Length: 109
Image (cartoon, rainbow, N blue to C red; front, side, top):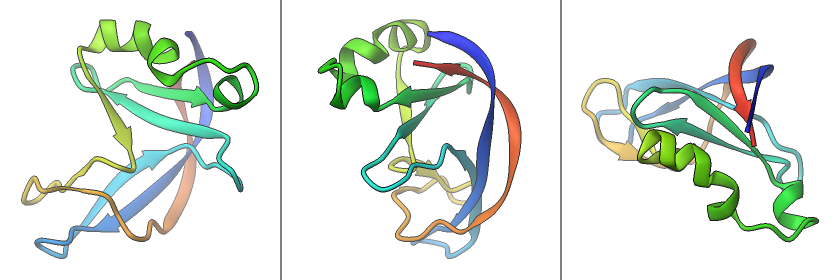
């Protein structure tokens, strides 16, 4: 795990329960997926998992995420666990329009 300043996409999705938009940040991946995005449940710290380590180095997600999980207690997988900011429903969006990009402090795994 190493800290870095990384470009991240600003996305939003509509909650399936209340219908209102919720904003979130996520690392974009190409075809086949290059990265996965995780948030620390305690700190909100952003983690970017490089899937090349899973696909080509034959390492497992749990092994790669172990240090972050130990630090945070639990990791939230974005976009599979988006929490609506209005009604608190947790959902996986069907579509995620990108509203822009910004540079954030994150950990590369």
